Image 1 (cartoon, rainbow over the protein chains, first blue to last red):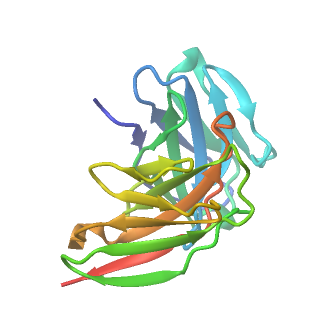
Image 2: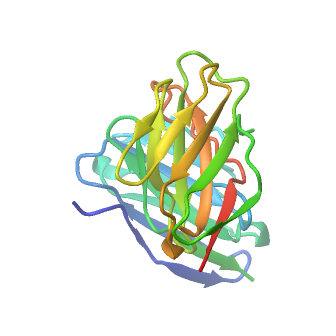
Image 3: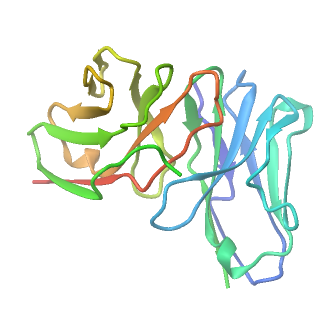
Length: 111
Length: 111
């Protein structure tokens, strides 16, 4: 069974630029999550989708972050404009029931 | 905030058992204990979970105290590839977005 796929794996941008990350969950998993992991900390949930609807986006900085999950499968997370403090690993996870399965993450560096 | 307390780091000799403790004194009756680990530059990987009985799978064993206020993850024969950050998380089974990661325990397996 293929795992959660994410791309790109690494991205370097300058502050105020825009960036987008892509996630393809495990086939059949209705729930998809985006997490932000700052160096030295555990992952923090940004947004949760159930199929193509948002379940929880209370921790998403909506002035600069947006996410969508068209057709209830793939998802994209966008940052516009990026700030220095957005440097982190962005993890995508999916689940069928209770257990979440994570992708390898996208490491973002904002200069 | 995470509902668990873990030591920041531990060492273990290769081939020996690694016992990783976790305190969760405020755990509710319907909350499960989950363990994930994160190897460097990878996403978190599910290890095991339990409610009140001890659990074992091909990766590890989970021992939960009778009062459920603490637990121990046991890797019976640690290898160098078990070097990772281990996260203990408590969550209700119906609340799939309540995955609050703390800083975890950095386990270093030494030859």
